[in-house]
Amino acid sequence: MDEKVKMRNLDPNERSHTFAEVALGYNEEEALKEANRCLQCANPRCMKGCPVNIEIPKFIKAIKENNLEEAYNIILNSSSLPAICGRVCPQEKQCEQMCVKGIKGDAIAIGSLERYVADYALANHLNVNTKKAKVGKKVAIVGSGPSGLTCAGELLKEGIDVTIYESLHKAGGVLTYGIPEFRLPKTIVETEVENLKKLGARFLLNTIIGKTITLEELENTYDYVYIATGAGLPKFLGIPNENANGVFSANEILTRINLMGSYEEDAKTPIKKGHKALVVGGGNVAMDAARSLKRIGYNVSIVYRRTMEELPARKMEIEHAVEEGIIFDLLKNPKEVIIDENYNVKGLKVALMELTDVDESGRRGVKEIPDKFEEIPCDTIVVALGTMPNPIATDGSDINTDEKGLIIAPESVTNNDKVYAGGDAVTGSATVILAMEAGKKAAHAILEKLNIQA
Image (cartoon, rainbow, N blue to C red; front, side):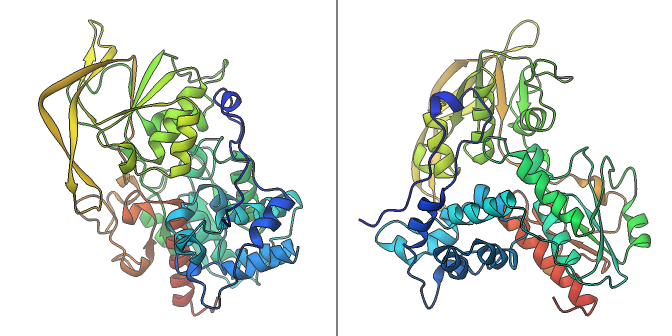
């Protein structure tokens, strides 16, 4: 069988104690071998699965010809953050899912090849400073996550002055505070931010729009505003004792580990290290939280109400979690946090579940087995059930939101024609690549409004 070239990974016994990157990337021999599997289809289905429309066959062809600078330029024409996308995009559900080779065998490892090209470009400092002359227009971007960074890159290339406002003390949004170092090294994010600075982007950190500066003030200062604040408010379970000592959101755990280094001995905001942690949820964020806690010394179990087959996380992340010793405690639904006399967590009461028929989401449904409960001992509970938008940026403004707090922005523009919005603030929690797609779409809408042809 024509199998894909598997990427080498750090040994599980080593990596479960370190935040070093797990996936090691292709070397030249591996990349060429994988690129040569590509059929160079006349009607490339893979491109239809790419949210940002990368010319996939062209960049793979350039790899075959050992012209990595050309491959990088082809990717850059469509994607502002290739080193990031090559690591964290769910290619198996997008471009690779559409690959014709995947019908009867292994799809081309498009994401791994994209990462190979991007890493080569970063290592060799390939020039990304391709901008046009200034056109005298200014855009403010609220949020420096993948959507904001992508929008900035598209606008800067066309000569627009861009200022990016970030509430935290480091740029990158979820790329910095949400995704662990072992999946996305922060030097990669920092390099992408520096590349935008080379194009002329100005970053204003520690600035909360809606508090430090109002949205109205931005509207009066800039020609247009793009809101890309993401979805940073965590959802909780709504069960008794959920505010006990030792219950955290995955957002807090990941932010403290990724942004604040709270696991380090001299940390200013240390995480009190317990013994047994339960992570509730089955998505990528749950895997990130569980694998991070494992690295700082916890025994970790993931509590999920369905089975392994229904887990929404990427297959690769699930496999890595299993290899690292994460336990999957399945078909269990949290009902109550068990506490001691000092209101500290000492366990989690769960209902036992069973699967039913496939529901509207395409997954098996699930229901509780009557009067079947279990108590799982633990000292830490981390809730990873998704997130909601933070309304601070639009509070007190005229921007319309729906009942969930999502900004209403059809075709990227809000009810205020000077204010655009996209990414998780509009769609709810989604993927990095979909946030990038939204940023690119908004940038092109702004450029069209300015009569600038990209």
